[in-house]
Length: 255
Image (cartoon, rainbow, N blue to C red; front, side, top):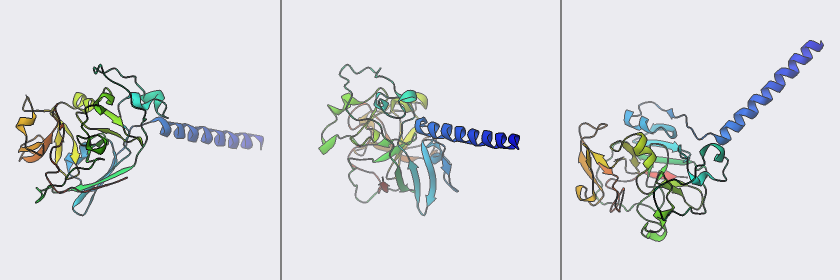
């Protein structure tokens, strides 16, 4: 009888320990397991930072928690600090850390499965205008009140992003972690209109604003779209990712 009670107590204690470990792991781990639905095109499977990707009618739905998988000084003081905090070690001599810190933010992007040029081109919003392949929000070329990024850019961390007031980490310009790990010519993400965003090189050439139209894109073949598609490019100069609005009709984002 005592042996049975001891065994039962041991099992209960082990269960509590395992649950506690799992809970602690979920509080500090920013890695993501992506649930991919049926008929999702292969190109969208490159979005490794999403929690869910599935088809809903004529839209691709992408859900993400918006936690960067790379380190950042903006993880300081958060529950992920022990594994994700890294002091600024970039090259900007004018760098100044803004007072915000990274927070988890559930976002649902609903973008056209078959993007097409719009009859009229909507302006991009001041919030998220797209999503990067690591699940991080892509913002446009403006700071608050559509001011230039002249001052705000000095708060970008060594990987090219920063959090806004409510903790939404985002990229306005080149996400250096992605272009260094995936390649300068790699798929970086999608804007809300469904058109892809690529890095700053194409066919071994560095793309400049002069190579692109007013929406900051052009139509050529890519590794993901060998038959050609309109796509945006990241450049080193303003407007960085998008120009005078969406080339196609944007879908939606809810947070």
